[in-house]
Image (tube, rainbow, N blue to C red; front, side):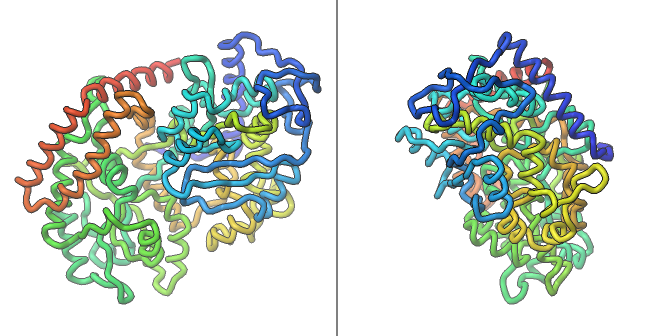
Length: 561
């Protein structure tokens, strides 16, 4: 893929054009949405629905409504990521946004599994005002189908029609349900056309190796089973310890459900469909061959099971100290670690992206790009006492002004206008390169509050990345399969019969993969795998494949609109 240079003004032009087309689409789909008189913030009661009407200033689609009321209001925001460690109100930027809009945010994160915690909240009937959950999470469908969250289009019609103008490049249309309503707005949503036009693919899957060890070995070929095993043998023979601690030969992000399944399959360029039909990637011969390669590595004592059992704390400790040799890992998860390793007493101990496992044809990886689904979806719960302030706050955050405030902070303090481009102050850029922790905790800019991040807008303001980060990003962009975003998230979610079938299959697969890797020989591997396929059929795999096919056909139809 040829990467085109991204012009600074292009994102804003694209965003404006696409947003206008979205606004027009919303009107044509729903008729003339003429906003009626609105209730003020002080008059809205907890029991009032979003359709309550009272006297208030007339609203237009050309003016942001948040400016009409900047009185203090508290909103709780559930971020469905247990690892998210940022707060609101301590950083300079969050204080600035609260002072400007009147909205004070209390961020809540799950103590364990986000789906389980959200399910408990739904059962109790007490939900946070704002909810951000992974677009793939089963709780998202439950929130929509269980009438726990507002339709954003109805809130926009009632309280802030400007929302349609800033909500994104067609993502509201992409998320529109059969009843005509859209219940969530995603962050990091990319359309294929945008990726082709700008070269921004949002691909973050990479195969990483520790630079110094890899180069001392002579930069071995890791793309074939033989080369992969030889490199692991060399690691065991010559580099088994680092700073008095044992090296971990391999790490797979997300363990079985992600790193050893979907992610590894993408590295092997396993197709998602053949001749228009959804393909069973799990039985692909190249994938099976590489799982057997890992089995051989385990049999020879070249890898252990730590990559299947390490806790988040153990993974962080090993990563920060350069104790992994090879990693199937998203490069953006190394954005803070690589500069730290490069500044250590061993400056070549950081990680670089290289060609990892490939299929028998030697094809380049086909890495997931960004897609229309985005990463997390933000919703407004019906438990909120301030639906009008909530939708107006989301509208503000989705706007160019809000994106700039959220990403860059206050003008004059954290950034200045250089020519016609907002530009971070040098001291902020230095922190970005050397101490992201301090940048996010004290200043709260850049990617600190990513829940409503629109890459179409904010990426034009990013300073040039440090070389130790840019190498990984460029590698991922070069191997991104731009049009494959449509395949992400084809599996059934929720409580339907087919979703339960898939959940049982996926859970069984998580249990089976460690058995496959630790099998005594290939014959035992084959027996375990055949047993899994039999269980999979009994659980209803055929209806899962039918669901995937229908979902893929529906997505293709949406993309063709």
